[in-house]
Image (cartoon, rainbow, N blue to C red; front, side):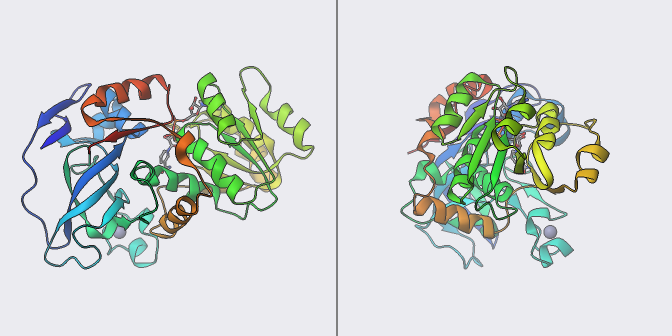
Amino acid sequence: MKAILKEKPGPGFTFSNVDKPSKLGPREVLVKIRRASICGTDVHIYKWDEWSQSRIKPPLIVGHEMAGEVVAIGEAVTQVKVGDLVSAETHIPCEHCSQCKTGKMHVCKNLEILGVDRNGVFAEYAVIPETVLWKFSPEIPLDYASVMEPFGNAIHTALVTDLTGKKVLITGAGPIGLMAIQVAKAAGASLVITSEVDPSRIEMAKQNGADVVINPIEQDLVKTVYSITNDGVDILLEMSGNKKALEDGLKSVTMGGIVSLLGIFGGSIDINLDSLVTMRGITMYGITGRKMFDTWKVADELLKSKKVDLSKVVTHIIPFENWEKGFELMLNKQCGKVVLNLD
Ligand code: NAD
Ligand code: ZN
């Protein structure tokens, strides 16, 4: 089968023919991949940055976001059958640590990530444990089912609190920030302000329904937010992984407000917690992954009911063979989500 591989340490990937998986564990499922989408993590592995060097053990089939069809099941599989259309939670929990046992599988202590710690989905077929498969509603187009995993990040981050009638600031309008704009709107936010520095993503933020888009390079974010809201925003969704965005985002939140952090800063950052968080009575949430499977249920419902329309987030659907073009788009940020079509 064809697959995108990190064949050996170093930058880049190879597009090779590898053996189709022939053996399934008792609770494993063979999925024929029909769509796969590119995530920032795949780009990190492509570039072979410091994190990838410490984590990835080549040879490895990369990729984790997908929509596909079940074609074979292990002897003990009960939750899916051949022919089911599935997407996958990419964080594979151990199911026996104390977190897993208490309904917090997304923070499993022994988490394995698809396409990072084990072979992923940028291939014609992938072996995936049944535990993490999500049978999505058939009304959801494959192109959107493929991005349910990052969509789940947007949902998990945005819905830490009731957004009805709330003013929301989203820092960073990458694919996940764009999806969060729509989630916040669908959840009843009265005002969605987005900050973004990249001109094409500023445009996308507007198309995805942000009421106000601020470029913090051209305008002072904090002053602009206060001039629009008088009192600051009720909630900040940090989706840029940029220190300045977080700092100004925190200043833009009203006293007693809520902050939900998704962005990855890639190391320690220097922030005055006393004045920005503690003394202002801010509640902060750290968000990792998606809740299994509360977040997936919400994702499915929002897509099935068309309360969220991902047509302005999924900007490119390209043939699997043209994967290099997909990575080029991601490297230049000239895209929302890039979906690879394997049909
Ligand atoms: P992305 O890198 O495509 O998006 C980040 C956006 O922030 C970009 O469009 C960038 O131009 C913008 N940005 C940079 N500096 C800014 C600034 N000062 N002000 C406003 N915007 C600024 O990433 P994504 O795929 O949309 O993911 C969003 C963030 O979430 C990333 O940091 C990613 O690493 C992180 N992430 C976390 C998890 C998790 O489980 N915690 C999962 C997925 C992604
Ligand atoms: Zn666990």
